[in-house]
Image (cartoon, rainbow, N blue to C red):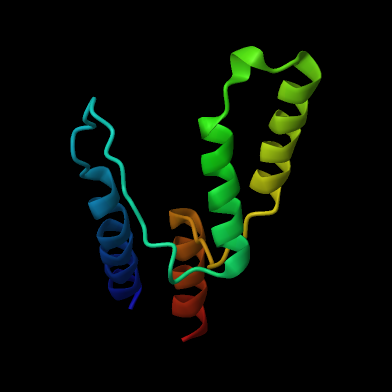
Length: 104
């Protein structure tokens, strides 16, 4: 019985960590992904529109206070962005699997 549990845990561990070890070589050329903003909420569309306006601004002709205000505005936008979804690390998944094995 101990051999079966040990081999099952080993297989689970290797199946979880194996694919994470194999990674493609990082490229020096970043890729840009464009998304449709039609499907997003009106708040997100307004934020994207404001960011595009900020990118189009001429910062050389702005005063220091104006630059600071734009910087704070961008920081506030970054803090208010919506994060959805549940993120589990590999360690958390392993712990969950071990608990499930011990319970069952």
